Length: 499
Image 1 (cartoon, rainbow, N blue to C red):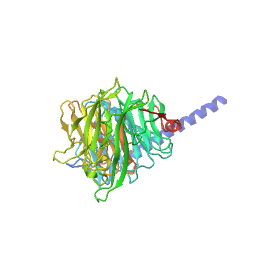
Image 2: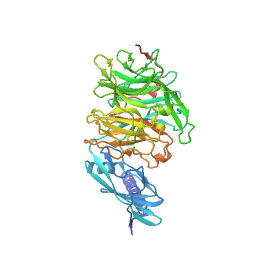
Image 3: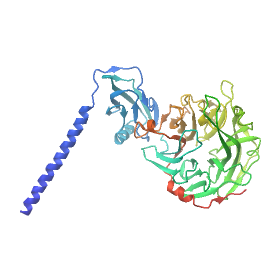
Image 4: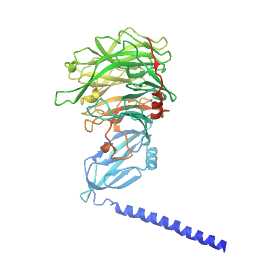
Protein backbone atom coordinates (compact mmCIF):
# COMPACT_ATOMS: atom_id res chain seq x y z
CA UNK A 1 0.00 0.00 0.00
CA UNK A 2 2.78 2.39 0.90
CA UNK A 3 4.52 1.74 -2.46
CA UNK A 4 1.25 2.35 -4.35
CA UNK A 5 0.72 5.61 -2.45
CA UNK A 6 4.19 6.87 -3.42
CA UNK A 7 3.62 5.95 -7.08
CA UNK A 8 0.33 7.87 -7.08
CA UNK A 9 2.12 10.95 -5.72
CA UNK A 10 4.77 10.69 -8.43
CA UNK A 11 2.09 10.49 -11.12
CA UNK A 12 0.36 13.58 -9.71
CA UNK A 13 3.69 15.48 -9.52
CA UNK A 14 4.50 14.56 -13.12
CA UNK A 15 1.12 15.87 -14.28
CA UNK A 16 1.66 19.15 -12.39
CA UNK A 17 5.10 19.68 -13.95
CA UNK A 18 3.70 18.91 -17.39
CA UNK A 19 0.86 21.36 -16.76
CA UNK A 20 3.35 24.11 -15.75
CA UNK A 21 5.32 23.57 -18.93
CA UNK A 22 2.15 23.73 -21.04
CA UNK A 23 1.07 26.95 -19.32
CA UNK A 24 4.48 28.51 -19.93
CA UNK A 25 4.35 27.54 -23.60
CA UNK A 26 0.86 28.99 -23.95
CA UNK A 27 2.01 32.26 -22.35
CA UNK A 28 4.99 32.50 -24.68
CA UNK A 29 2.82 31.75 -27.68
CA UNK A 30 0.32 34.36 -26.58
CA UNK A 31 3.06 36.99 -26.20
CA UNK A 32 4.46 36.12 -29.61
CA UNK A 33 1.02 36.31 -31.21
CA UNK A 34 0.46 39.74 -29.62
CA UNK A 35 3.56 41.18 -31.33
CA UNK A 36 2.66 42.12 -34.91
CA UNK A 37 4.78 40.84 -37.80
CA UNK A 38 5.78 43.28 -40.56
CA UNK A 39 3.77 43.10 -43.77
CA UNK A 40 3.19 45.46 -46.70
CA UNK A 41 6.38 47.19 -45.63
CA UNK A 42 7.10 50.70 -46.89
CA UNK A 43 10.80 51.56 -47.18
CA UNK A 44 12.27 54.86 -46.01
CA UNK A 45 15.49 56.58 -47.12
CA UNK A 46 15.99 57.98 -43.62
CA UNK A 47 17.92 56.45 -40.74
CA UNK A 48 15.75 55.38 -37.81
CA UNK A 49 15.37 58.08 -35.10
CA UNK A 50 16.98 55.97 -32.39
CA UNK A 51 18.25 57.16 -29.03
CA UNK A 52 21.02 57.04 -28.07
CA UNK A 53 22.37 57.62 -31.57
CA UNK A 54 24.01 54.28 -32.31
CA UNK A 55 23.83 54.60 -36.09
CA UNK A 56 27.08 53.82 -37.95
CA UNK A 57 29.39 53.67 -34.95
CA UNK A 58 32.51 51.65 -34.13
CA UNK A 59 32.25 49.56 -30.97
CA UNK A 60 34.66 47.30 -29.03
CA UNK A 61 33.98 43.59 -28.88
CA UNK A 62 33.63 43.74 -25.08
CA UNK A 63 30.92 46.39 -24.82
CA UNK A 64 27.51 45.81 -23.20
CA UNK A 65 24.43 45.53 -25.46
CA UNK A 66 23.50 48.75 -27.26
CA UNK A 67 19.88 48.92 -26.19
CA UNK A 68 17.96 51.85 -27.65
CA UNK A 69 14.66 53.67 -28.07
CA UNK A 70 12.93 54.49 -31.32
CA UNK A 71 11.95 58.16 -31.07
CA UNK A 72 8.61 57.59 -32.78
CA UNK A 73 5.05 56.94 -31.71
CA UNK A 74 5.16 53.32 -32.82
CA UNK A 75 3.00 50.37 -31.83
CA UNK A 76 5.72 47.78 -32.43
CA UNK A 77 9.24 47.45 -33.72
CA UNK A 78 11.30 44.69 -35.33
CA UNK A 79 15.09 44.75 -35.37
CA UNK A 80 17.30 42.48 -37.45
CA UNK A 81 20.98 42.32 -36.43
CA UNK A 82 22.91 39.43 -37.94
CA UNK A 83 21.00 36.27 -37.03
CA UNK A 84 19.15 38.02 -34.19
CA UNK A 85 15.58 39.16 -34.68
CA UNK A 86 13.91 41.23 -31.96
CA UNK A 87 10.15 41.72 -31.89
CA UNK A 88 8.98 44.29 -29.37
CA UNK A 89 5.82 46.08 -28.40
CA UNK A 90 6.22 49.86 -28.17
CA UNK A 91 9.48 51.61 -28.98
CA UNK A 92 12.07 49.95 -26.69
CA UNK A 93 14.69 47.61 -28.16
CA UNK A 94 16.71 45.45 -25.74
CA UNK A 95 19.11 42.61 -26.51
CA UNK A 96 19.39 39.42 -24.51
CA UNK A 97 22.90 39.36 -23.01
CA UNK A 98 23.72 35.83 -24.26
CA UNK A 99 22.43 36.62 -27.74
CA UNK A 100 24.45 39.82 -27.77
CA UNK A 101 27.69 38.05 -26.83
CA UNK A 102 27.10 35.46 -29.56
CA UNK A 103 26.46 38.22 -32.09
CA UNK A 104 29.57 40.21 -31.16
CA UNK A 105 31.75 37.09 -31.18
CA UNK A 106 30.43 36.18 -34.63
CA UNK A 107 31.12 39.67 -36.03
CA UNK A 108 34.35 40.52 -34.19
CA UNK A 109 36.52 42.46 -36.66
CA UNK A 110 33.54 42.75 -39.02
CA UNK A 111 30.54 44.98 -39.63
CA UNK A 112 27.00 44.23 -38.44
CA UNK A 113 24.13 45.61 -40.47
CA UNK A 114 21.08 46.57 -38.40
CA UNK A 115 17.63 46.94 -39.91
CA UNK A 116 14.78 48.61 -38.01
CA UNK A 117 11.14 48.22 -39.05
CA UNK A 118 8.42 49.99 -37.08
CA UNK A 119 4.62 49.92 -37.01
CA UNK A 120 3.54 53.57 -37.07
CA UNK A 121 -0.07 54.64 -37.58
CA UNK A 122 -0.95 51.07 -38.60
CA UNK A 123 1.72 51.08 -41.35
CA UNK A 124 5.02 49.21 -41.33
CA UNK A 125 8.03 51.39 -42.18
CA UNK A 126 11.48 49.96 -42.79
CA UNK A 127 14.18 52.56 -42.16
CA UNK A 128 17.51 52.83 -43.90
CA UNK A 129 19.87 50.20 -42.41
CA UNK A 130 22.84 51.29 -40.32
CA UNK A 131 26.01 49.52 -39.18
CA UNK A 132 28.09 48.64 -36.14
CA UNK A 133 31.76 48.07 -36.87
CA UNK A 134 33.01 45.66 -34.17
CA UNK A 135 36.73 46.16 -33.55
CA UNK A 136 38.94 43.65 -31.78
CA UNK A 137 40.62 46.53 -29.95
CA UNK A 138 38.96 46.19 -26.57
CA UNK A 139 38.17 49.06 -24.26
CA UNK A 140 39.16 49.00 -20.59
CA UNK A 141 36.27 47.22 -18.85
CA UNK A 142 35.63 49.68 -16.00
CA UNK A 143 34.60 53.31 -15.90
CA UNK A 144 34.54 55.65 -12.91
CA UNK A 145 32.75 59.00 -12.92
CA UNK A 146 31.28 61.64 -10.70
CA UNK A 147 27.48 61.96 -10.57
CA UNK A 148 26.48 65.55 -9.87
CA UNK A 149 23.36 67.65 -10.28
CA UNK A 150 23.74 70.02 -13.26
CA UNK A 151 22.24 73.05 -11.56
CA UNK A 152 23.43 76.44 -10.33
CA UNK A 153 24.96 75.02 -7.19
CA UNK A 154 28.65 74.23 -6.97
CA UNK A 155 27.80 70.76 -5.69
CA UNK A 156 25.02 68.79 -4.00
CA UNK A 157 24.70 65.09 -3.20
CA UNK A 158 27.82 64.13 -5.17
CA UNK A 159 28.73 60.48 -5.72
CA UNK A 160 31.61 58.66 -7.37
CA UNK A 161 30.49 55.52 -9.18
CA UNK A 162 32.17 52.61 -10.93
CA UNK A 163 30.50 50.87 -13.87
CA UNK A 164 31.52 47.76 -15.76
CA UNK A 165 31.08 48.65 -19.43
CA UNK A 166 30.93 44.96 -20.42
CA UNK A 167 27.61 44.64 -18.58
CA UNK A 168 25.45 46.95 -16.47
CA UNK A 169 26.97 46.38 -13.02
CA UNK A 170 27.39 49.67 -11.15
CA UNK A 171 28.36 50.55 -7.59
CA UNK A 172 29.27 53.53 -5.45
CA UNK A 173 32.95 53.97 -4.56
CA UNK A 174 32.36 57.21 -2.62
CA UNK A 175 29.05 58.76 -1.65
CA UNK A 176 27.84 62.00 -0.09
CA UNK A 177 25.93 59.77 2.35
CA UNK A 178 29.21 58.48 3.78
CA UNK A 179 31.26 61.70 3.84
CA UNK A 180 28.85 64.21 5.35
CA UNK A 181 27.49 65.54 2.03
CA UNK A 182 30.87 67.00 1.11
CA UNK A 183 32.07 67.74 -2.39
CA UNK A 184 34.36 65.14 -3.97
CA UNK A 185 36.87 65.45 -6.75
CA UNK A 186 37.01 62.75 -9.34
CA UNK A 187 38.76 59.40 -9.19
CA UNK A 188 42.09 59.20 -11.08
CA UNK A 189 44.08 56.02 -11.90
CA UNK A 190 47.81 55.43 -12.20
CA UNK A 191 48.20 54.04 -15.72
CA UNK A 192 44.55 52.86 -15.65
CA UNK A 193 45.55 50.49 -12.82
CA UNK A 194 42.78 49.93 -10.22
CA UNK A 195 45.37 48.95 -7.61
CA UNK A 196 46.74 52.51 -7.45
CA UNK A 197 44.47 55.52 -7.69
CA UNK A 198 43.39 58.66 -5.90
CA UNK A 199 40.30 60.70 -5.09
CA UNK A 200 39.75 63.84 -3.02
CA UNK A 201 37.09 64.76 -0.45
CA UNK A 202 36.80 68.45 0.33
CA UNK A 203 36.02 70.12 3.66
CA UNK A 204 36.57 69.24 7.29
CA UNK A 205 37.83 65.69 7.77
CA UNK A 206 38.56 65.32 4.09
CA UNK A 207 41.76 65.06 2.14
CA UNK A 208 43.41 63.18 -0.71
CA UNK A 209 42.76 59.44 -0.45
CA UNK A 210 45.47 57.27 -1.99
CA UNK A 211 44.40 53.73 -2.89
CA UNK A 212 47.21 51.17 -2.81
CA UNK A 213 45.77 47.73 -3.42
CA UNK A 214 42.61 48.59 -1.50
CA UNK A 215 44.43 50.19 1.43
CA UNK A 216 43.30 53.80 1.68
CA UNK A 217 45.53 56.49 3.17
CA UNK A 218 44.31 60.01 3.88
CA UNK A 219 46.89 62.58 2.80
CA UNK A 220 47.08 66.29 3.53
CA UNK A 221 48.85 67.45 0.38
CA UNK A 222 49.07 71.09 1.43
CA UNK A 223 51.67 73.28 3.07
CA UNK A 224 51.90 76.92 4.12
CA UNK A 225 52.06 79.19 1.13
CA UNK A 226 49.81 77.05 -1.08
CA UNK A 227 46.59 78.80 -2.11
CA UNK A 228 44.49 75.69 -1.40
CA UNK A 229 44.64 71.93 -1.14
CA UNK A 230 45.28 69.68 -4.11
CA UNK A 231 42.63 69.71 -6.86
CA UNK A 232 43.61 68.19 -10.24
CA UNK A 233 45.96 65.15 -10.24
CA UNK A 234 48.20 63.19 -12.54
CA UNK A 235 50.44 60.20 -11.64
CA UNK A 236 54.01 59.85 -12.86
CA UNK A 237 55.14 56.84 -14.90
CA UNK A 238 56.32 54.91 -11.82
CA UNK A 239 53.49 56.10 -9.58
CA UNK A 240 55.88 57.50 -6.99
CA UNK A 241 55.03 61.10 -7.85
CA UNK A 242 51.88 63.02 -8.55
CA UNK A 243 51.64 66.42 -10.15
CA UNK A 244 48.74 68.48 -8.90
CA UNK A 245 47.24 71.94 -8.97
CA UNK A 246 46.28 74.14 -6.06
CA UNK A 247 43.27 76.27 -7.06
CA UNK A 248 40.92 78.86 -5.59
CA UNK A 249 37.76 78.19 -7.62
CA UNK A 250 35.04 80.85 -7.90
CA UNK A 251 31.52 80.27 -9.25
CA UNK A 252 29.61 83.28 -10.64
CA UNK A 253 26.39 83.95 -12.52
CA UNK A 254 26.47 85.59 -15.94
CA UNK A 255 24.62 88.81 -16.70
CA UNK A 256 24.53 87.77 -20.36
CA UNK A 257 21.27 86.00 -21.36
CA UNK A 258 23.12 83.45 -23.51
CA UNK A 259 25.33 82.34 -20.61
CA UNK A 260 24.32 80.58 -17.40
CA UNK A 261 27.15 80.00 -14.99
CA UNK A 262 30.85 80.78 -15.04
CA UNK A 263 33.48 79.04 -12.92
CA UNK A 264 37.05 80.28 -12.87
CA UNK A 265 40.26 80.23 -10.83
CA UNK A 266 41.16 83.38 -8.94
CA UNK A 267 44.49 81.75 -8.02
CA UNK A 268 46.18 78.54 -9.15
CA UNK A 269 49.63 76.94 -9.05
CA UNK A 270 51.14 73.57 -9.99
CA UNK A 271 53.34 71.32 -7.81
CA UNK A 272 54.79 67.82 -7.64
CA UNK A 273 54.37 65.57 -4.58
CA UNK A 274 56.60 62.64 -3.68
CA UNK A 275 54.28 59.95 -2.28
CA UNK A 276 57.25 58.00 -0.90
CA UNK A 277 58.79 60.76 1.22
CA UNK A 278 55.60 62.84 1.69
CA UNK A 279 57.26 65.97 0.38
CA UNK A 280 56.07 68.66 -2.01
CA UNK A 281 58.38 69.80 -4.81
CA UNK A 282 57.75 73.39 -5.94
CA UNK A 283 59.09 75.36 -8.90
CA UNK A 284 58.93 79.15 -9.35
CA UNK A 285 58.06 78.50 -13.01
CA UNK A 286 54.88 76.69 -11.92
CA UNK A 287 53.95 79.06 -9.08
CA UNK A 288 54.14 82.48 -10.74
CA UNK A 289 51.84 84.95 -8.95
CA UNK A 290 51.29 86.77 -12.25
CA UNK A 291 49.99 83.63 -13.96
CA UNK A 292 47.37 80.92 -13.48
CA UNK A 293 48.81 77.39 -13.82
CA UNK A 294 46.48 74.38 -13.76
CA UNK A 295 45.52 70.93 -15.20
CA UNK A 296 48.94 69.24 -14.84
CA UNK A 297 49.60 65.75 -16.17
CA UNK A 298 52.75 63.67 -16.66
CA UNK A 299 53.77 62.37 -20.06
CA UNK A 300 53.66 58.54 -20.21
CA UNK A 301 57.47 58.36 -20.27
CA UNK A 302 57.64 60.54 -17.14
CA UNK A 303 59.95 63.10 -18.76
CA UNK A 304 57.56 66.05 -18.89
CA UNK A 305 54.75 67.72 -17.01
CA UNK A 306 52.12 69.12 -19.36
CA UNK A 307 49.90 71.88 -17.98
CA UNK A 308 47.88 74.96 -18.92
CA UNK A 309 48.76 78.54 -18.07
CA UNK A 310 47.16 81.96 -18.50
CA UNK A 311 48.25 85.51 -17.76
CA UNK A 312 46.67 87.07 -14.69
CA UNK A 313 43.71 89.32 -15.60
CA UNK A 314 41.20 91.27 -13.55
CA UNK A 315 38.38 88.88 -12.65
CA UNK A 316 35.51 88.62 -13.18
CA UNK A 317 35.36 91.79 -15.32
CA UNK A 318 37.96 90.55 -17.82
CA UNK A 319 36.88 86.89 -17.84
CA UNK A 320 36.66 86.87 -21.65
CA UNK A 321 40.40 87.70 -21.78
CA UNK A 322 41.35 84.69 -19.67
CA UNK A 323 43.17 82.62 -22.30
CA UNK A 324 45.04 79.44 -21.35
CA UNK A 325 47.85 78.02 -23.47
CA UNK A 326 49.40 74.56 -23.40
CA UNK A 327 52.91 74.21 -21.94
CA UNK A 328 55.30 71.56 -20.74
CA UNK A 329 58.29 71.50 -18.42
CA UNK A 330 60.89 68.71 -17.99
CA UNK A 331 60.82 66.39 -14.99
CA UNK A 332 63.44 63.87 -13.84
CA UNK A 333 61.86 60.91 -12.05
CA UNK A 334 65.22 59.59 -10.81
CA UNK A 335 66.12 62.74 -8.92
CA UNK A 336 62.59 64.09 -8.47
CA UNK A 337 63.48 67.49 -9.90
CA UNK A 338 61.57 69.91 -12.10
CA UNK A 339 63.33 71.44 -15.11
CA UNK A 340 64.18 75.09 -15.69
CA UNK A 341 62.75 75.75 -19.16
CA UNK A 342 59.10 75.95 -20.22
CA UNK A 343 57.98 75.11 -23.77
CA UNK A 344 54.70 76.47 -25.15
CA UNK A 345 53.26 73.73 -27.34
CA UNK A 346 50.29 75.45 -28.86
CA UNK A 347 49.21 79.06 -29.04
CA UNK A 348 45.50 79.14 -28.29
CA UNK A 349 43.98 80.18 -31.61
CA UNK A 350 41.16 78.79 -33.73
CA UNK A 351 41.45 78.36 -37.53
CA UNK A 352 39.46 81.59 -37.89
CA UNK A 353 42.15 83.48 -36.00
CA UNK A 354 40.14 84.18 -32.84
CA UNK A 355 41.69 83.17 -29.57
CA UNK A 356 40.56 80.14 -27.62
CA UNK A 357 41.48 78.68 -24.28
CA UNK A 358 43.12 75.27 -23.84
CA UNK A 359 42.56 72.94 -20.89
CA UNK A 360 42.65 69.29 -19.71
CA UNK A 361 45.69 67.95 -21.62
CA UNK A 362 45.75 64.12 -21.56
CA UNK A 363 48.34 62.05 -23.44
CA UNK A 364 47.60 58.58 -24.82
CA UNK A 365 49.53 55.82 -23.00
CA UNK A 366 51.58 55.08 -26.13
CA UNK A 367 52.74 58.71 -26.10
CA UNK A 368 51.49 59.51 -29.59
CA UNK A 369 48.41 61.69 -29.11
CA UNK A 370 47.67 64.69 -26.91
CA UNK A 371 43.95 65.21 -26.33
CA UNK A 372 42.71 68.53 -24.94
CA UNK A 373 39.70 70.86 -24.82
CA UNK A 374 39.36 74.28 -26.43
CA UNK A 375 36.82 76.95 -25.48
CA UNK A 376 36.45 80.67 -26.12
CA UNK A 377 37.98 81.54 -22.77
CA UNK A 378 38.32 80.39 -19.18
CA UNK A 379 39.13 77.15 -17.46
CA UNK A 380 35.80 75.44 -16.86
CA UNK A 381 34.61 74.26 -20.31
CA UNK A 382 31.76 72.13 -18.98
CA UNK A 383 29.72 75.37 -18.81
CA UNK A 384 30.80 76.47 -22.30
CA UNK A 385 28.62 75.09 -25.13
CA UNK A 386 31.37 75.96 -27.64
CA UNK A 387 33.87 73.67 -25.86
CA UNK A 388 35.34 71.07 -28.23
CA UNK A 389 37.98 68.37 -28.16
CA UNK A 390 41.12 68.53 -30.29
CA UNK A 391 43.90 65.97 -30.73
CA UNK A 392 47.55 66.70 -31.45
CA UNK A 393 49.75 64.07 -33.07
CA UNK A 394 52.95 64.46 -31.05
CA UNK A 395 54.97 62.65 -33.74
CA UNK A 396 53.82 64.79 -36.66
CA UNK A 397 52.84 67.98 -34.85
CA UNK A 398 49.48 68.04 -36.64
CA UNK A 399 46.15 68.89 -35.01
CA UNK A 400 42.86 67.10 -35.62
CA UNK A 401 39.82 69.25 -34.78
CA UNK A 402 37.79 66.02 -34.37
CA UNK A 403 34.76 67.22 -36.29
CA UNK A 404 33.28 63.72 -36.23
CA UNK A 405 33.52 63.69 -32.42
CA UNK A 406 32.37 67.16 -31.37
CA UNK A 407 28.84 68.54 -31.09
CA UNK A 408 27.36 72.02 -30.73
CA UNK A 409 27.35 71.56 -26.95
CA UNK A 410 30.11 71.04 -24.39
CA UNK A 411 32.48 68.14 -25.13
CA UNK A 412 35.24 67.78 -22.55
CA UNK A 413 36.61 65.85 -19.50
CA UNK A 414 38.32 63.07 -21.43
CA UNK A 415 40.58 60.12 -20.58
CA UNK A 416 42.30 57.33 -22.49
CA UNK A 417 41.99 53.57 -22.46
CA UNK A 418 45.20 51.69 -21.62
CA UNK A 419 45.70 50.48 -25.22
CA UNK A 420 45.45 54.05 -26.62
CA UNK A 421 42.71 52.96 -29.03
CA UNK A 422 39.81 54.48 -27.09
CA UNK A 423 39.01 57.60 -25.16
CA UNK A 424 35.94 58.53 -23.15
CA UNK A 425 34.61 62.05 -22.68
CA UNK A 426 31.63 63.86 -21.17
CA UNK A 427 29.24 65.45 -23.65
CA UNK A 428 26.15 67.62 -23.16
CA UNK A 429 25.10 67.20 -26.79
CA UNK A 430 21.56 66.10 -26.00
CA UNK A 431 20.19 69.08 -24.09
CA UNK A 432 23.14 71.25 -23.12
CA UNK A 433 22.57 70.44 -19.45
CA UNK A 434 23.23 66.77 -18.64
CA UNK A 435 26.66 65.33 -19.41
CA UNK A 436 26.88 61.71 -20.55
CA UNK A 437 29.90 59.45 -21.21
CA UNK A 438 30.76 58.90 -24.88
CA UNK A 439 33.37 56.49 -26.23
CA UNK A 440 35.48 57.25 -29.32
CA UNK A 441 37.64 54.80 -31.24
CA UNK A 442 41.02 55.99 -32.58
CA UNK A 443 42.38 53.48 -35.08
CA UNK A 444 46.04 52.63 -35.69
CA UNK A 445 46.26 55.38 -38.32
CA UNK A 446 45.11 58.00 -35.82
CA UNK A 447 41.65 58.40 -37.34
CA UNK A 448 38.86 59.11 -34.86
CA UNK A 449 35.49 57.43 -35.43
CA UNK A 450 31.97 58.53 -34.55
CA UNK A 451 31.49 58.22 -30.76
CA UNK A 452 28.70 56.35 -28.99
CA UNK A 453 27.06 56.80 -25.59
CA UNK A 454 27.58 54.45 -22.63
CA UNK A 455 24.94 51.69 -23.08
CA UNK A 456 22.32 51.24 -20.37
CA UNK A 457 20.17 48.23 -19.47
CA UNK A 458 16.95 50.19 -19.82
CA UNK A 459 16.67 52.30 -22.99
CA UNK A 460 14.73 54.97 -21.07
CA UNK A 461 17.55 55.45 -18.53
CA UNK A 462 18.88 58.76 -19.84
CA UNK A 463 15.38 60.20 -20.19
CA UNK A 464 14.76 59.59 -16.49
CA UNK A 465 18.25 60.24 -15.10
CA UNK A 466 18.66 63.51 -13.16
CA UNK A 467 22.43 63.39 -12.63
CA UNK A 468 25.24 64.56 -14.89
CA UNK A 469 28.17 62.21 -15.59
CA UNK A 470 31.34 64.16 -14.85
CA UNK A 471 35.04 63.44 -15.53
CA UNK A 472 34.82 59.77 -16.66
CA UNK A 473 38.00 57.70 -16.27
CA UNK A 474 38.73 54.29 -17.78
CA UNK A 475 40.30 51.52 -15.69
CA UNK A 476 41.67 48.04 -16.40
CA UNK A 477 39.86 46.45 -13.45
CA UNK A 478 37.57 46.88 -10.47
CA UNK A 479 38.94 49.16 -7.76
CA UNK A 480 39.45 47.28 -4.45
CA UNK A 481 37.45 49.68 -2.24
CA UNK A 482 33.96 51.11 -1.94
CA UNK A 483 32.06 53.97 -0.31
CA UNK A 484 32.21 52.34 3.13
CA UNK A 485 35.99 52.10 2.91
CA UNK A 486 36.23 55.81 2.09
CA UNK A 487 33.98 56.59 5.07
CA UNK A 488 36.31 54.62 7.37
CA UNK A 489 39.37 56.34 5.89
CA UNK A 490 37.77 59.71 6.67
CA UNK A 491 38.37 58.95 10.36
CA UNK A 492 42.12 58.61 9.87
CA UNK A 493 44.60 61.31 10.80
CA UNK A 494 45.80 62.82 7.54
CA UNK A 495 49.46 62.21 6.71
CA UNK A 496 51.08 65.66 6.44
CA UNK A 497 53.32 66.75 3.58
CA UNK A 498 56.24 69.15 3.79
CA UNK A 499 58.60 70.98 1.48
